[in-house]
Image 1 (cartoon, one colour):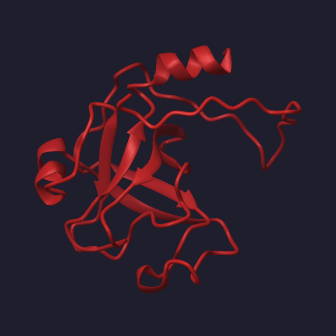
Image 2 (image 1 turned 90 degrees about the horizontal axis):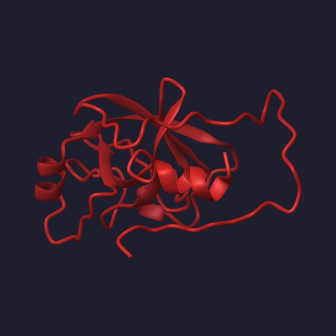
Length: 148
């Protein structure tokens, strides 16, 4: 398998309200242009030098930008990539998903295009984008498993 996937079922139904809403998914295989601003959120580390002790008590978000595949593969040379992966980051560093954010959403305009997957050894380094599982590549699988 070339993707990180997990099929989980909830024990109880969700009750939608002001803090719980469904997310829209992109069309199957829809892509975002390089440079598109996206927002990643989570409760992960806020200090790359102390990833374990800097886990956030609050939901945090940061704006990063879609990185084209060729640039991402060059900047993260030596890592294995699959068609289900997309990259996002900030060239100068300082903004990124980090340890503890895995599974969190990568969103733009209310549409979830990615799921936090992995990154290089340290977070928020210059020219070291984060790697996300593409929800557009896996849309059909997501819909099948979620029965929507």
